[in-house]
Image 1 (tube, rainbow, N blue to C red):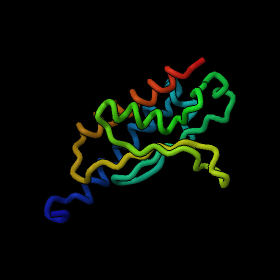
Image 2: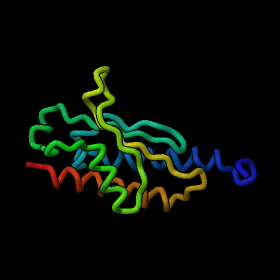
Image 3: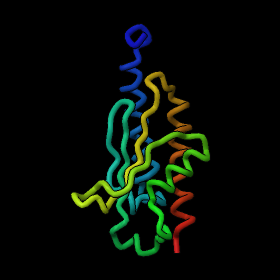
Length: 133
């Protein structure tokens, strides 16, 4: 099935598209999340987005004791998008950094990639708007 349906090639092609859309929507100069997106990296059907709330822009964000990764994961789930949210993995102490992981199916279509990015970015922006002071 993997070979017959060319799933690895599809994951590679759609993964490149997914990564480019994530970078465009999260890191462009006018993106709400841009000041907090440290890195977008991955390949194929496995992508991670690292957020950093230690910079000067973070002074206007208050998660009220919550963790961004968990809040964003909950928002995605409410919209029907399953992601993995992680908090505290960017330093040795495990106290800094939030990561959101995406792993779509190997048979994903271009339209589904666009829908995933729409839901993902909406969720991230919802969390940022709700917690801006």
